Length: 257
Image (cartoon, rainbow, N blue to C red):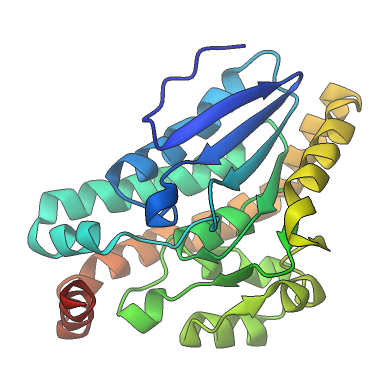
């Protein structure tokens, strides 16, 4: 197996031709701090460069897939414009790296997938969700523009009306509802979601390689075109969010808890 160069918060394991990518901050419900953000940005080009990788499974360690953005990081982004610029630029890169990844990515949503966790699901190729899991993009609730969030790609998965409702409200989308509206392929009993996703990845890994990878590229050209049309405005608008009283008050209130 190729040697992956990643922070400890993102671990890659080998299972024959399948790579298992684990978000690994289980005590923090895999909330996205600087290192996890960097690891997610870097892992997809490395997957593409791994000559023996034919498919991947992405999942969270512990009870959650990811609880979303780490509020300590948001607080530092309010105060430090350079950090803000760098993290937002990295978010742009993360989204495009996922879209351009050569290897089909199967998501095993083992628990809640919130914020950036929800976006990673939206950018995956096949999605298996545990019955008790849910998706949520609370960017707007917190006071942020959802620049690397569900709204970039949700209109390709589900109706524009539903995308608007869930983007505005941040409401939880339970697994059964996610499957019904096109955000998930399959719902499994909680203990079986990883095994089901891994089996799907192995099924894909056995298929003719060039046909799989070029077909993924054909499909993701739709996604890339849509994302490139919106992401630069979205990122600039999200950067402005950090200067608003609403966002600053919400971050302060959360950190006081």
